[in-house]
View 1 (cartoon, rainbow, N blue to C red):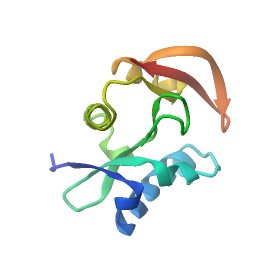
View 2: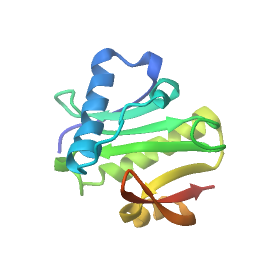
View 3: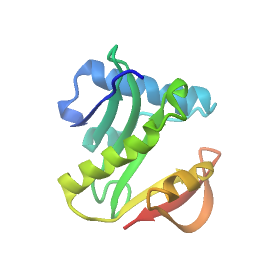
View 4: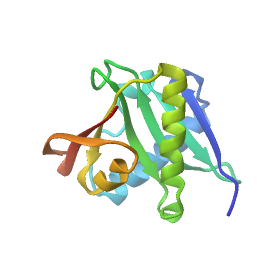
Length: 150
């Protein structure tokens, strides 16, 4: 298996190429693969920390977006969690959650984390400590559920 390098940077610290790679992957997954035309790039990117993994050739293969309190929720939030199709099922998503939690703990301390999860990922997020709160809802015609990890 090739070497994976994890980095987390605030938007203002990303290079143009890094941000482009992150957006390319997110669009590939959320717009093209999930056939969901929506405004994938939003103003939250500018206040977010972006965690991403690169492979040996420098391509971004995984990413998540970490939002401080008060941006999406009163809690810290994780979103735009994406993984290249060809690397799924290899434990990289679990590794990404561990890296995301480590960064949040270092940057923000021990605080609840709130997410809007696609419903088919409830078990994945559940094994990382998230619990369902509230009822399901549609976001961009995709079933979602709010989840919190304390």
